[in-house]
Image 1 (cartoon, one colour):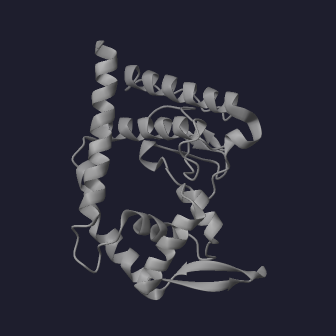
Image 2: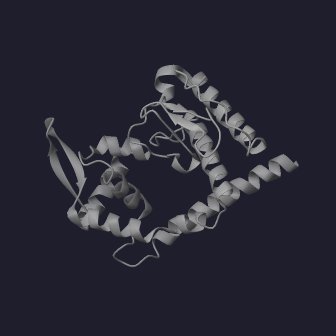
Length: 236
């Protein structure tokens, strides 16, 4: 095995095992907080939008089957953490909402933080920033390969302009018209508009290349004077 192949295999193995450990940790929490990872993910998603979600929408966002999403909803209903209500736009359809108890669960869970957050908090700021950028690229690649469908990242967004400047806020969001830094990169943004749906895979590849090039340039030019920002209409 070459050094490159060995490095890839060991890194992938580390990610897989760390993910498994974090999921297992969710079951070791106090009884009132312990939820199956699939149920936890669904409840957290429900907490993002007051309009509620249809089962099909939840399944698509989570990358699971409608049957699997329905099973998770039923389990959460049994614990009075979610409720169903008629869709105001279509009386034949049903939307799922977090119950008051479910919202309280989310508040307590977020206040306590998770094992993943505690581990990430041990990284130096520059290491966490590099990890956040790498995570954006990994998710983008996973989406191109059909491995992930629901995550709405900055890197996959029509409005994202990576590394149009330097310093603490090198990126730019064309939706809100504001610069931002690595600490504000989002894995799931409600306002995201998928770039690939309208401009194709080539545009997504161009953004990824610019993201990588900007990150490399940022390393070699820290402390230098930032050039004036020129916010282009596209990120190619």
